Length: 267
Image (cartoon, rainbow, N blue to C red; front, side, top):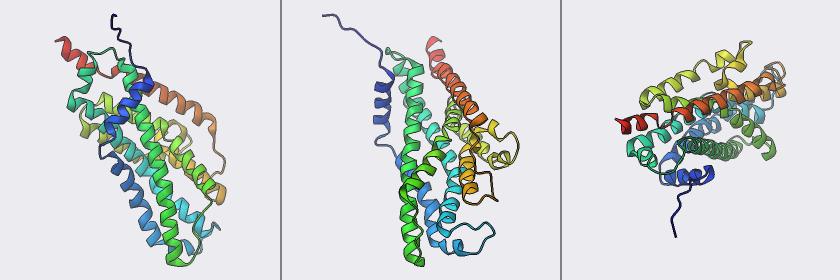
């Protein structure tokens, strides 16, 4: 019987990509930032008892202040590092060159790797929630005050923050493919984090997807303390722009993925 080679589908490729990172140290890249953000919060939780003009409870202030560092810097930085590592793994091992000899669509392979990035973000989401509760429990014991918020509330807020990071993840994935030198790719990505807070205070904040996670957190802050920030999430125009940026970035990434390898083989 004649053997037939059928191209792998997207989910099969995704499964292969997940196996590749199973033994990597990428888990620690996700865990360490979460611990770094929440452990100091627990040790200094007494600052949440200080009287403030916004009339916010200590437990809510503890949650908001802890997630500020994650939403502004740690989540984007982790996405940048993960996308660069995933892209460079194939370059170093010449895995993509080998894949080009197989009936595998480079566009599907590109999307499979991006799905891995999204899964890694979901893992970091779970870790951030777990470390929040660990730190809140520690702070509660240290200062004899209940800093724990309901699980449904924490999961909802944290999930919205990470969901808002998807457009930025697509941008960082595109940069990791277009810029093959890891230090420049990571450097440009990290540089894009800096203006996010500044852009959030402009009227065109929605045009800069890296500030979306911080925006979602600040709207929650505004819901608790209305004098701080607007409490309503402005889905229009944030949602359509975020979708367009995601699709556009992934389209460019898929079009350019493996170009260098194909050109080298044709020489």
